[in-house]
Structure formats: C-alpha cells, structure tokens
Length: 483
Image 1 (cartoon, rainbow, N blue to C red):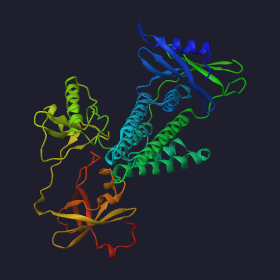
Image 2: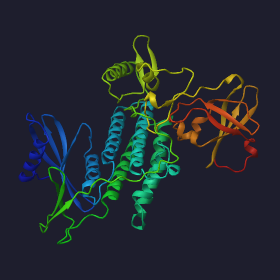
Image 3: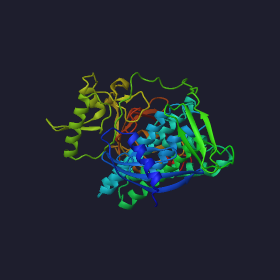
Image 4: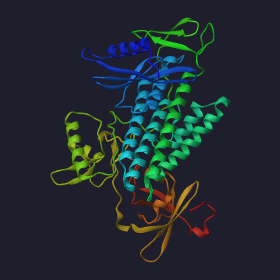
C-alpha cells in the first residue's frame, strides 16, 4: 500500500508528541485503509526504539503491539474508544468501558498463544478455559455499560449468555437492527456453548481449538462493533454538502471538537458536553463490600512444577510491592512443595484470619477477585448423617436437572437440582456429571435435600452446597427433556 510522504510525516510527528526526548522513529508504513460506518480509518505499523505500535487515524491514536497483536482487533478497539468523541453526548464511566475491552482482547491474545503451543487434549481444554474467560470479561464489560438495568433483571457476573441477550436487546434495538440483533443472539449462544464444550471435551483436537478461537474472536469483534454502532448512532454528515467524509480533531485541552469535511472543507466546531451520571437502581442488589477487588489475571488450570515455582516467586514479589494484579490462582511453595489456591493464599500472605473448615464465598460480583475483605466464610455442614453416591444417569430439562444416584446398598435415589449448577461449576455439557461422586444430606419432611458434587467450583460468589429435592424415579417423571 502506498505511504504518502505528508501522511507519514504527520504520523511521525504524532508519535514524537506522545513520547520523551530519547524516542526515535525507525520505520512507519501504512498497511491498511478501511471504511466502517461511512468513515475512513488508516492503520499504520510504526517501528520505534521503544517497540512496535499500531497508529490508527481519524482521530489519531496509538496502541502497543505487545498488548494488541492483531491489527483487526486494534482497529475495532479504536472505533469503540473514539466513538465517545464522535457521539453527541458523553458516555459515563468511559475509562472503565475501555478497560474491559482491552482486558477481553488481552485474554483472547493469551488464548491464541496457548493454542499455538497446544499439543495434547488437556492443552486444548485449557484453550477453551481461556476463551471462556475472555467471553466472561466481555459480559462484565456489557454489565458496566448497562448499569441502569434493574437489579432483578441483571444476570450474574459470569452469565455470558444472559448479558449477551441484554446486549442484543439494548445495543441493537429497533426494527432497523433486527438482523444484527438476531446475529448477536445466535452467535453468542452457539459460541458460548462450543467454548464450554471444548473446556470439558475428552477428545479435543487441534481443529476444535482453532474453531473455538475463530468463533470467539469473530464474536468479540462483532460485539465491539455493535457497541460502537450504539454509541455513535447515525454517522454525522457535513452540514454543508451532506458527506460522511469528516475528519475530527480535539483541541489540546479537550474543550472543543473540530469536525471538518474532506469534500467541501466545511468546518464545524462542537463543544464537548459535560459528563452526566446515569441513574442507577441499587435496590435489591447485593450490598457492595468495602475496598477494591483484587483481580486475578491469566487464569491457569494446568501447571507444571516449574511453572508453579515461577508463579510463586512472581506472586510473592508482587505482594511485597502491594500490587493487586496476580498472575495465577495457584501457587507453589518451594519449601515444602505444597500447592494452594491463590484465594486462600491471599489470607496467608496477608496474615488474615481464615477458618480452615469453611468455603470462601465472595460477596462482590467481580470474577476472579481474591480480596479477603470481600469473603464470607460459611461453615461446612456436619456430614455424619450424609450419604455418598455416584451419578449414574442424568436428565436435563429447561427447568431443572435430574440425577439418578446409585448407593452402595444397591438402592438409588433421584434428586432434582437447579440449572444454576451449570454456571457454578462451569459446566456446558451435563454428561460430565455422570460417574461423579455426590454427597447429600437426609431429606427433610418437605423433600428438600442439600448436596455437594465432586466438581471444581468456577463461580466463587456461590457456595458448593446445592439445595435440591428428592423426586420420583425417572420413569414416573413427566416428559422433561432429553438426557
């Protein structure tokens, strides 16, 4: 692609204006020119002594290629970021909204790196977990944008499908967006299902991992573009000739926007409106705990001893520096070779009181938070009169999940549990419940029973103890769905 000298010099001047005295531009090249929503965007690849950068124009901004490796992702993020300037009204909490987009893209990049190095089934399952984390990060971003949704209508933090449904209804509302709305709903449901299947797939292959990554990447780009479309609204036109070819510049103190037409050179000056606060409905929401969340980054499931040792070293260094962004939920103690979850290590390293016979349940809705101040420590039940069984059959219905549990005295018991279990334990395919051990309490007079499944708990805002009820054998149940 041609690199006009005047445009290259403009990009080089911009790069120098954003850096210090020792900064040097080594090479600048225009690599793409795209039209989105009637606007022209140029993407430049800039090599400097401080690394490589994407420079995207109209208005101009730069992005570190170590953070955003894909040009397409950088362009999508740029459109979403600059849409606030282009919109007629300011969007509240803009900084937080940009953070979630970057976080989601970073997680997607990490998933791609894992996919490139994946060799065995467990590696591809780990890729699925990474992609799942990226989509959950998108769900958190949607939640921050839709902060006016009533408490009773808000899905929980990790419910990607619930938030995607709200995103489609709010960001693609109206008859003109009917097809976009349908695309978002269908893509979100199918992609989420496929990624969750990969996380638990016993015969995952390299192509399965590649398909999951491609579907997730495409969905995230569609979601970012939809948010940009929602923020921008109808693309602005020149007040004189009606052209969409408008360039935008912001004054140094960001007090005025200048919008000029590339066709007739008409210039309009638009003041930036003051920030406004959106009304929020706090009634019925879980009380927000005091203090900021301490969030885990780069969630890992599979660790070699060397990886674990490196994680512990990094964790200890970051704690000493009072940094709050950890790298892994598992740590490895070199002295006695023990592995522990970082949620619990946060108590140990912080010298905080913790009950060993208690599960850690977090009051906040932030996925991955390990702040001890946000923890409830419900005591585990006394299991002296509980029974242990094996799940031998599962029936899944739109309203509940039915388990046939085999006992050691050649008897069976049938237990109905809520579908919420799938989210608590990060389960996409109910077949993974088969052959799982289950511990359950005596049945109350009303048929209620508490149960604990031998599954890893994914949602730390909920306890592992599930409240269900005993039911009649499957043959006596009404038609409730496929098993």
